[in-house]
Image (cartoon, rainbow, N blue to C red; front, side, top):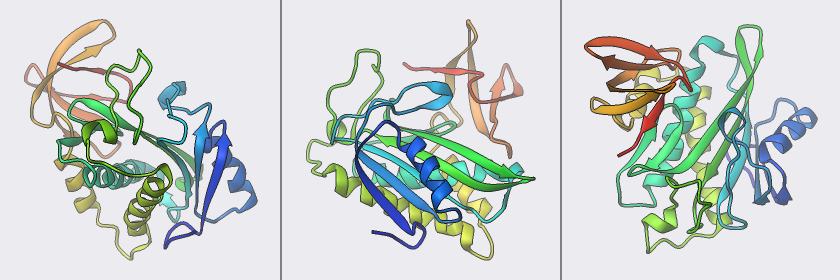
Length: 251
């Protein structure tokens, strides 16, 4: 199976990590966009070395190798926004509840996490040669480990949902391909990409509680700068936060 962007879509019964497998295959088919998904992932990765839970033959464990066409590294957060917009649309199409993008790249239903995204860019000079995009979506799992108190799934949030692991994975790949096609257009509509990302950004223009180190503070998210840093008003002053500098405190 393939689509307009991914020339190869590979299905694997079991693998330690779809990301590691995508990187291995990338060396064999250099220059080709490909997607790899598995029915069972045993060592899924999240951000900064964290693990990612995947229910066997229930949830989506997908990694893609994407060549954006020598895209300048200083604009790499645009790729992050495009992927988030695609996954947001996929999740939103399956639930009739509030769905949002939690900066920088988680997808929430209400205040619970349904999806995590990990993007690793491989550079060539000042451009992105290719990206490995890892996506984990909780689809049919209804029980999570105790430490995942803020996790949910599409099936939990939509009692009428019926979708197999395979059909939902292929649907997500289709959403992703349609959005990534934008990189192959004569002009990338950066304004629209950013507008769509910010429109669904969790906590935008609302005062929320955060944790920085051991210090709790309140701030209002106002946007994201070109490098992907979170812009926030804290005590009336604009402050920029890089990834992992702060932690959201949920209600």
